[in-house]
Image 1 (tube, rainbow, N blue to C red):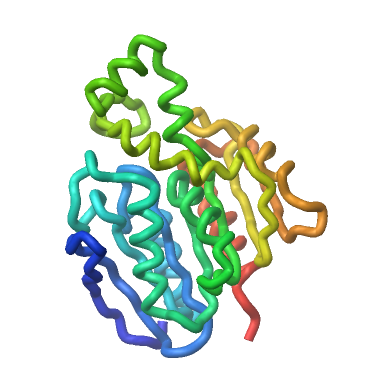
Image 2 (image 1 turned 60 degrees about the vertical axis):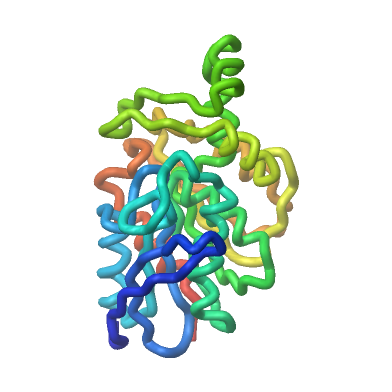
Amino acid sequence: MSGTVQSFELPARDGQLVRGLRCDTGTGPVGLFLHGLLSDAEGDKSITLWNQAEQHHRSWVRFDMRAHGRSDGSFDEFTISRALEDVRLVLSLFPDRPKILVGSSMGGWVAAQLATENQLTIAGAVLIAPAFSFMMQLFLQVQPHERQQWVEEGHWTFKSDEMEDDFTLSYNAVVDSKPYDLMGKRVNYRCPIRILHGRLDDVVPATQSVEFLGHMPSNSDVELKILPNADHRLSGHIEHITNSVDDIWPKT
């Protein structure tokens, strides 16, 4: 990158700070990486995309949503609404410039939602194994008596092979997620969308991305690539992500 690397702290409405790193060339498009649930801005995909931006002299941002990484907040407060608020806050640093969103898993869901908001000047999005509506899906996966316990106690703890530690999700997070169900509505994106999903994904099935694509109007610039030997993390397939960013990056 030809710009200066700067750390930033942005106060959310509740006073908690969203922390991240940006390098701004001062003009043109800006790329942002949106991490997944219980991940952060220091993962392999995030760092690789940051380095790619440096090689191409592009403006880029990586940051932690609240309750993740170096940003404030505890996980029992986390909701999709708060995640969306955090990303909009970072986007406000570049109000009139085109933005490219790259979202992984939960971050893919957030990116897909934000790309529907025309006032944000989103110029394109790459969705990596997007976990659309995963909170409601988690709720429906537990047994009926467990759901009742979740509602009554206000939280439920999951044991996950994908995560190093167990994690507890509030029932408020489930209720909050309902308005952002992109699987139950027809969405017409005005920017290019690229979806990458591993056929071996045992966290978010690739069939979900196929179903999502089926909701798109025929004239949408939305493409889905199913990678036959890839898992949820797309381990060993990072070049597909960087190539997708190159594909939709606005030409100047």
